[in-house]
Image (cartoon, rainbow, N blue to C red; front, side, top):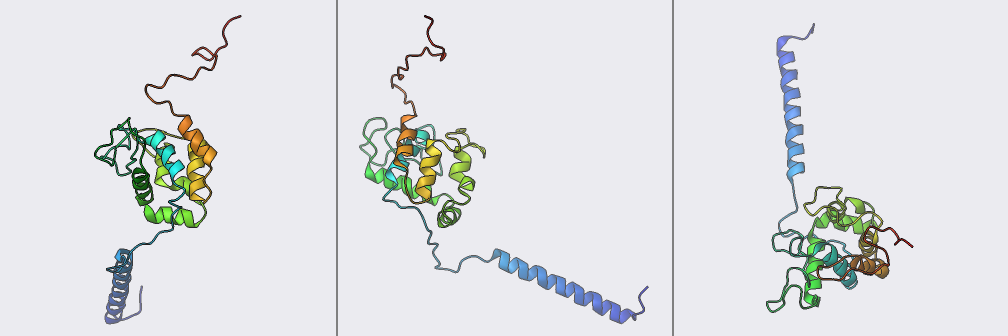
Length: 199
């Protein structure tokens, strides 16, 4: 039981209520504040000059017409087997152009640019949390399923680009591992079930 007069208790409650409202208002103001008008985000991204082999890996893994080689995806991958930038270029016919590699670079760095810039700045720390990796490895729902796994050639190719030294062998291996429609199977000397032929 309080020994304060009613007026003092009411004033104390009003002061506490006012202080709580001020805290909520100031938290709301700072939580909702964004960049000032005219501010432009300038990110720290991997080199565009070294992107071509990375683009080739993404084209092979993700760039077909039924996947990210489509206008209907946020991450668009242009190239020979997907969406084409030139009006005279036909999917499946002409090789990927330099302009399409540029568009792929722009598309990749535009997906979660702030997060991606932070990953690049921290030399690959949290690479596994970048949406291209979470979706590509299937750790986050992805309509196309898992397109690569942690530690494989595609993963190493992407990570090496992000950390500043492209692993050309990994990028080439990523492309080589994809079997394209109409490509004859590689003769391994083994039957399709993997068992050696009987003597």
